[in-house]
Amino acid sequence: MKDVILSKIKAYHTIIIHRHLRPDLDAIGSQMGLKFLLESQYPEKKICVVGDLNTMSYLAKMDEITDETYKDALVIITDVAVSHMISDDRYQLGKEIIVIDHHENDTDVENVSIHYKDTSFNSACEMIIDIAKTHDFYLSKDAATYLYGGMVTDSGRFLYLKNPERTFLLASYVSRFEPSIQDLYNYLYTETLSRKILKNQFSAFELTKENVAYRINSKALIESTGEDFQSISRGMVNQMSGIKEVLIWGSFSEDHNGSYVAELRSRDIPIVDVAKKYGGGGHLNACGATLENIEKVYQLIEDLNEKVKQHDKHSTRN
Image (cartoon, rainbow, N blue to C red; front, side, top):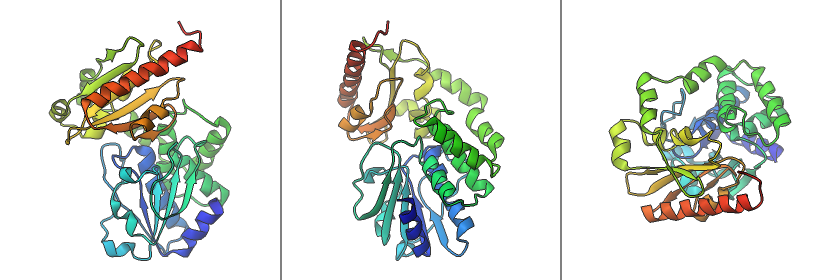
């Protein structure tokens, strides 16, 4: 598969890289990392990146391109396989489409030439690094920084590992190219005093009878913070993590159109099937969905209760 992807890349002069809406650092990292990687290997090619940005986008800048740019272009979509989640729907204008993703979802993108799906990777960035390592590619400092960043964040600082030996081998490989690790960590793990105070506002949560922790964030509350939607929806969900009695937690944030974006997390219990039931997806223990109304929110919470009940039947948890 990796050889076929490389042959496609070699065949095109223009390559446009997409990823998912409201990006996290794995989406940005795989997109920008791949851009810098390809620019180093093929300086004669035109490599473009498009999509929305937010406070999780590190130093990324997107390209302003016309629809005409897509003519005879190869489109590569990273870190997402479902069409409604892709940032900038002009991906459909490309001559060929490649999807590179590590999530549990199958793709519904039409006319995909290659769907490189491998859920054994922790991140899309790992998949890109693995391609680079396989072909002994040189990584610029910028490429290495973005790709390392996606590895760190999507593995929860290497806390959640599917294949530890491979992950650390790839981390070692990308580290050869001197990523700006300290600068990246300063970006990720330091925050302003106002942000620290804001977190206190989102530290309270509800508990179900099965100890599923959850928060429901209204549109008015989110807007009152002055923060972008993603920094509340995804940025605050782990305020409920690290509690011994809580195996599943989630935040439900009201979007501008009245729908609710669910960010779901768990320890030990796979929950992606619940996210898929509501049209979402993601990782086994970190996933999400968009819910059309508050009634669906409470239905999903009840489904999470059932996951805990089933888990308790087969465990000795007190």
